Image 1 (cartoon, helix red, strand yellow):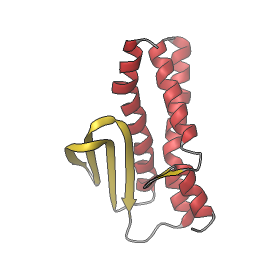
Image 2: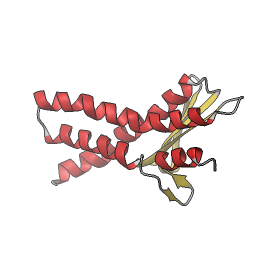
Image 3: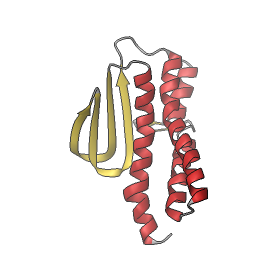
Image 4: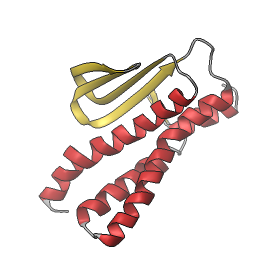
Length: 149
């Protein structure tokens, strides 16, 4: 991988893929009438916080390193609703990768291919159940709901 592709991955692809993934969770929560939603991009020191309608958006200094979406509702989510919200992130990345694939067929580019592959990677890896410290994958959330933990 050359340096321009690596920089593109860190500065463009990773943040876009993360925003799309977390926005998918927000869309899922919004479809279930969430009262409050938070979207955080990156880690480290908070650079900016603002609101888009009922969504609090926080951008952190290391913007290319992960993200988090959370939502709350007066009436607690039912188990199938929690599963829906968890699935919406990976589904969003999968749909975006699918759409971008057709663009890639018309306009082949290593930059576009990297965007497709990263979105596929996010979709697949987030369906694998795992937990690391305080963070857990969408797959873990789904398994947790299905096993009533």
